Length: 256
Image (cartoon, rainbow, N blue to C red; front, side, top):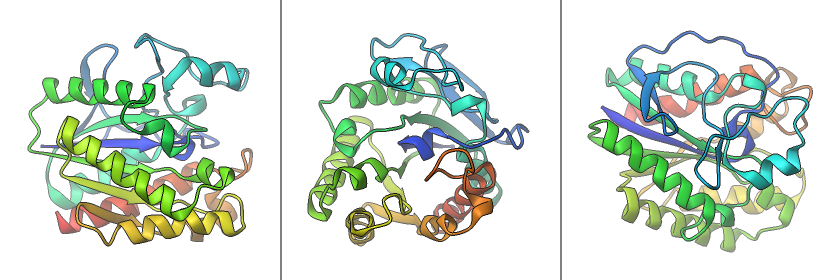
């Protein structure tokens, strides 16, 4: 059995336009920290966990987003819609014939600095992963990262973003024993040179030991209307997230 942690910002939290499917994924479950359960994996995924490690509330069309962001460390798929995790795990289990425990730990509108060791979000992330480790016996732990849009908006430099990835990877190796840090390369969000700083940092770090580029197709999907959420700029549609999940899982499944 493998434990796979899915982390990052809004495209990993899930901000698609619909619930495209919610079939249970065979040989896969999702760990829920709030109830300490391993439940059948299906869309929608995730939990709304506050900074005080209590039950929060989901993002709905009526949610006041600034208030939600202030209170929550981690969030479930917005509006109860499709996320990439089931598509990823369905593909991964079919390729590897291994069982999977998915840990969804993502939050929109976050910069990489919000996830580094010592930050409040990192502490919640680690507590949730530790809960999953106690609950199930996993032979390997993989970390899957989809983040960078907020850093592009903020103008984070290639070197600063790359250094932060090393810091995050080292913390995760120390604190939960990850075997691999996989990256779903961020797409284009600002549509200017700021995107390239983040994309370049992710490309470069995946040449280092312990990192793996799972897929670089995000930028290609940005140019295809069917793969983008028509209601929220810069975010993938349900079809786009399913595509990303399959592509990323094929890479991990075929080398592991």
